Amino acid sequence: MTAGLAAVPADEGLFSWPDEPRLIGGNCGACGTTTFPSQLSCPRCTGTDIRPVPLATTGRLWTWTVQAFEPKPPYRADAPFEPYGVGYVELAAQDGSGAVLVESRLTEANPDRLEIGAEMTLTFVPVYRDDAGNQVVTFAFAPEQTAAQ
Amino acid sequence: MGSGSGNVAIAGIGIHPFGRHQAMTGRAQGAYAVRQALADAGIGWADVQCAFGGSVAAGGADTLVSELGLTGLPFINVHNGCGTGGSALAMAERAIRSGDHDIAIAVGFDKHPPGAFNADPEASGLGRWYGETGLMLTTQFFAMKIQRYMHEFGISAGTLAKVAAKAYRNGAANPNAWRRQPLSEEEIAAAPMISHPLTKYMFCSPGEGAVALVLVRADHAPRYPAPPVYLKAVSFRTREFGSFEVFSPWLAPARAEGPTTKAARAAFESAGLGPADVDVVQLQDTESGAEIMHMAETGFCKDGEQEMLIESGATQIGGTMPVNTDGGCLANGEPIGASGLRQVYESVLQLRGAAGQRQVPGQPRVAFTHVYGAPGISCCTVLTK
Image (tube, rainbow over all chains, first blue to last red):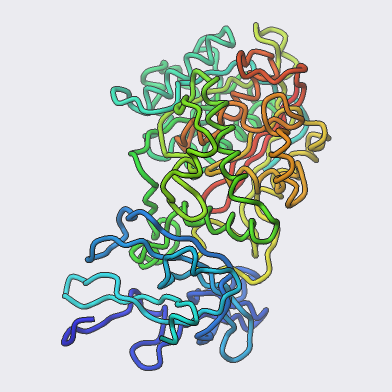
């Protein structure tokens, strides 16, 4: 990210930012279901007692693919298109309440280095510059060995 | 939504060829299909008492009256995503079964620009970020669903290629199909990867086309020229908590049955028939993996049995459970509003014994159709002769 310009989240409410960034889910007080992002009522029991809950920063890859062509709008990007990984990562809520499978971009786009069941770690990637020139970032997951490098 | 009284027959079918038709609007293709269906039933537009129809991207179906005739009939627009055609059919079926009308039309048509669909997140109740950051693609969903399925049930990449090769082979025998060039399994497997593990030739493309069906009271069916085909059941379901569906920023950790399983079971129960009774099957094959997974979800086999069934040729024309005899979405493309009705069109042809080069042998008596799509909907029908 270019120094001097602010990095801003792709959407308010997806993750805490910029200190100790964590994905923020919604946990239902009635049935314990966790959603991501949070929503006003629970899709399982229809309850409305929803509280924000930070999600774990590591979890296992449940499934994955590689986006090999540039999507049409509303997809936004500044850099020339490079294929990117997409997957669902199983994350526990940090306080031990219900787990949730979160759909996310992956930092790895090589099929040989993606494996169901692999340990993944939360990170953040630049996606585009907004109209004010801010660098917009979104969440992504990296395979454990890449994240450690 | 579901029914099973078997009080409705299909007396006429019409289709505008699927593919790309630069000079023709989607509406014009819809009107063409209606005229074909009316001619097949031996009636005129003035005889039609009510109509249900829709397109997702090609305009309001009710405006077809300006071309077909301003007869004053009630014409209800249906705009229900990938379930548009199936919903129109379900409502037309009810209009007859209720006794309100004797003759109804269901019509679906569409015309999409080339390339993958670009869905609007906000129209689906999702944040704009979901589209802006590159997560809102149907292709990703299907790839991730089959990726997980292959991992759990031992389906090989070679089987994905076999499904696509069958589709293009069947499409070559269908004069109304878009893709009519057979492709080898090797060519399909070696094509550029669109969304791993699926290559370019394993995906259907958004396209153009139209289908219309004339529905009548079953006891009136003998009055019409074509051999009658009965719509024994039509069932429509949406997703329940825990199913793995397209455009899901998150999933519950435990899987539940999806709308396909629920709709198929409801259709079979309504019809008083089961998968073993079915002679010819049309399944949603947005891509090769979808056909494989839907074989199990609709009850035609158990999870994992597809590898052996497909290897043995069971799903080919002439096999024990012929699937997508007209080439499916892979060979016909997907004009969303028309797709589900195309499956019923093909089923009627097969039950009439009029499917020509691609006719399933042995005089099939029972057909099944299945549509699946965004945002987690499915419509299934059971038809008999």
